[in-house]
Length: 96
Image 1 (cartoon, one colour):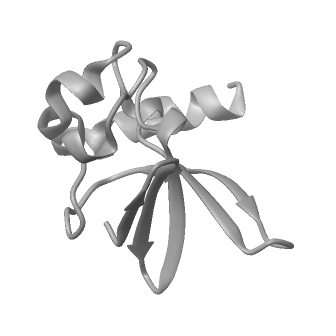
Image 2: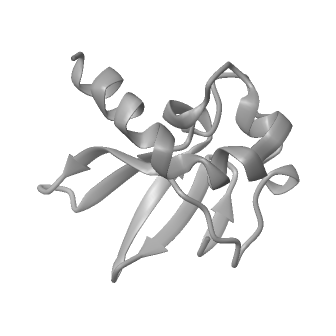
C-alpha cells in the first residue's frame, strides 16, 4: 500500500502502481479506508481494468469476497485465501 486517499488506495506492485478505488474494496459500503488499510500494508487484489492510453490500472478486492462485506469483516482470511479465490473471480469477471 503506497498511499491512501479519500477515494481509494494506491498500491505498488512489480514496478507499477494501481488504484484500489473505495467502491472496489468490498461489495458493502466502506466508510473509512483507514479503518481497513494502512500505508505499507501488503494486500492481494485482482486487476479488473487496464487503461493503457491513460496508464491506469484498476484493482479490486471485492471480487475475492465469498459474501458482501467479507473484506470488512475478515480481511485477513480473504487475503490468506486470495490465490484459491482468484480463479472463481476471474471467471466471474470474464462472464464464463
